[in-house]
Amino acid sequence: MSKLPKEHQFTDLSDYGRPIARVIANSLKSTKFTPVDVTIAFVISGLIGVYCIIEGCYWTAAFFLILKSILDAADGELARVKETPSYTGRFLDSVSDIILNFIILATIGYLTNTHFGFIFLAFFGIQLQGTLYNYYYVILRNRFAGDTTSRVFEDKTPIALPGEKQKNVTFLFSLYKALYGVFDEIIYALDKKAPEGKPFPNWLMTLISTFGLGFQLLIISVLLVLNLKEFIIPFFIGNSIFVFIFIGIRKIFY
Image 1 (cartoon, rainbow, N blue to C red):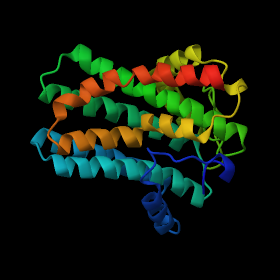
Image 2: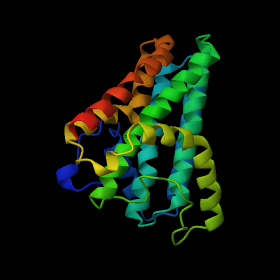
Image 3: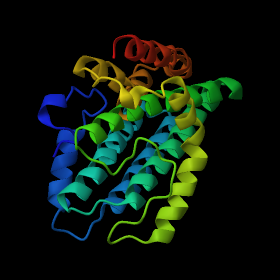
C-alpha cells in the first residue's frame, strides 16, 4: 500500500527496497513477528555493516547496509499489512536510524583519520538533508489523506494507539525530540510556510528523495565498494548545499 494516492506518487529514489520489503512483510503477515522485531533486525544488520567496514570487507558491508535499508521499509510495511500502526514503532525506527547514522559516519571518519569536526558536520548534514525530505513528504501524506502516523509537526506527545503502551510512546517520543528536535526546528525555520504552499510537483519530490536515508546508504555503499571511503564525509558535507537550493525552488515556485 502506497503512502500517497496515485496522482501524487513520485519516483522515490531512496525507496528502492520497497518491493522486497513488501515481500518480507507479506511473508511475515501471518506470523508472530512484529514490526518492532523487524526494526531490531535492521539495527542488527546496520551494526554488522559497521563491523564489516572496520574489517575492510566493503562488499559485505554494502550488502548489510542495503539490507538495513530494505528492512527499514519492511517494518512499516508489516505494520500496514497487519493493520497495527504504532507510535512506538514510528519513533523507535527514527531513533535507531539516527544512532546508526552517527555510528556509521564515526566509523568511516575514524578509519580515514578525519577530524571529529568534519565527522560532525557530515552527520549534521546528513540529518538535515533527511529532515527536509521527511518534512516535505509528510506534508504531502497529511494533505492527501495518505499515511498520517507521522505528523508535520512533532511537538506534542501522541496518544498511544490500540495495542501499545503510553509509557513506551512517551519515552520514545522524548528521545526522538532530544535527537531530532534541532533538525526539525532548523528546517521549519527555513521553510515554515511549506504546509500552506502549492502541492509539490512529483519531479521536485524525486530530486529531494535523494536526501532519503535509503539513497544516502546507497551512496555510502557505492563509495565503499569503489574503495573511496575517504570521499564519504566530504560528500555529505558538500551535498548539504542542496538543502538551500531545494528550499529556494519551493519558495519561489510553489
